[in-house]
Every structure is written in structure tokens, then in C-alpha cells.
Image (cartoon, rainbow, N blue to C red; front, side, top):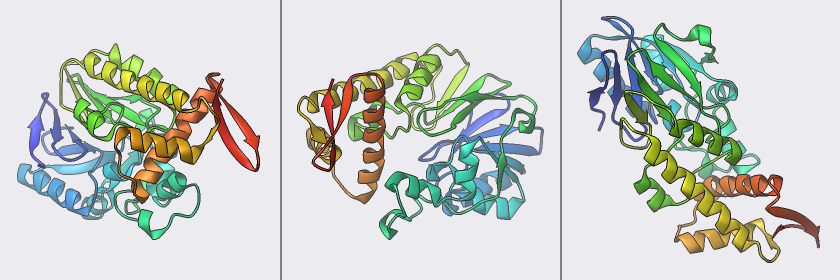
Length: 292
């Protein structure tokens, strides 16, 4: 873990729970794509920088989930680097309480205010094309989170953040976190057609052909959607849908899974309603979902 892997003349990634990209700007200056999940990850990244005699100029965050920005605060304090994040992701990065609050739908209990859902604050600036170093392009990848992006480097390495999960991850967890299902599918179909020398997904194997994995992720989204519609043959409330999904997929309920999977299921319900496959019924002081 935390080994440095070179995938292009200027492009690298650091193997970690969520892969960290590294782009060499010149002989001594580098930037990172994400920073890992916590202070310890930041320390290990700093060791790699020091071993290679590299100076960290900037961190470019793909999105604001805690496992991608957790090393920000430490690395910024140690190196004085600038941090950039796209759109709403910048606000979440500057105010990490927003993530557990968003997931819970209110002020989050202590059970949710931990490093896996709430990183330490860092000073991030809004990411624009002008803020990118020469030789790096930004690619919009919405769906998993609000304004997630990826990056293509001049040696044709494409960092894809969390827009795909490995088959092993999908088989284990079944329901991966999504914010906007429609946008996520659009992203997957777009990514499926992309060409690059090397693709670096944060939570899947590095590859030179991303299409098969994109299709696996598309198929899983469709499977979950069909299952939810089937569960709603008779009017059911959200908690019943969630319970049946957990039981059918053999998932274990805890506070973290309740908010992560629960938020995702709400996103599926919204998408299925907007696309005409479900309808919402308000009766007896309760919102129930029914197949249209």
C-alpha cells in the first residue's frame, strides 16, 4: 500500500484505498490528484515526495468525499500547497460537515461525524480551467457526487475518480453510492467510449480498456433500478424499500450504511419517479412509492 507507480512519462499514481494521482510538472515540482483518506495518508504521501526530492505545488481534488480529501489539511500545512476543487465540491471541502449533514438529511449524530465521512477542513479554491497546470485537462464526471471531475494528462493518462467501481467491489457491496442516477448513467456511457493510454479509476484496477468495466457498472445500476420497481408493486414506504434491499442483497445495517445506501436509494426513487416508472402517493401521513 502507498507504493508509487509510474504510468506515463509524467504521470503516476499512489496505490491506496482511493488511488492518489501524481503529475510531475518539471524535475522538482508536482501536483496531486486527491490526497487520500486522512492525516496518515498525507504523511505517507509526504514521504514519497521527500524520497524523490519533489515539491508539492497543488492538490486537485476530483470531488469532496472524505477518502479523497482527507490528506488535504496535513499536506497543505506541511507544504503550503494550493488546493482546488470543482463547484459544490469546493464548498464541501472547505466545510466538511456538509457531507454527513447531506447524507443524514439534518444535523448528523456523532456516529457519522468521523474521518470516513468528514475530513478535516482545508483551504480550497474553486477549480477552473485556468487553475490547471500546463498539460492537464479536466473532464466532467457528474453522478457519483455533485460536481465530480477527472483529469487527463499530456501523456494520455486519464484519472477517473469514483465514476466506476470494480466488479469485486460491486459484488461485495452491491449498492454503490450515487447522488444523481441519470447523470451517473450519462457519465458511464460517455466513459465507455473514451480512449486513453491508461485509465486510473480510484477504486478499480488500472487498465488500457475501460469499456468492459463501464458496462458492468451500467448493468448494476439497471439491476438495482429493476429490483426497486419490483419491490414497489404494492405501495411501500422508503424504509420498507431500504429494508428489503438490505435483506435481498445480504447487507449489514449500521449508521454509516444507513445513510450511504439510504441516500442512494432515495436518488434511485427520485430518478424512477422522474422517468415515469414509479409514482409517489401521500396517504395516512406517509409517503409511499408504487410502480407506475
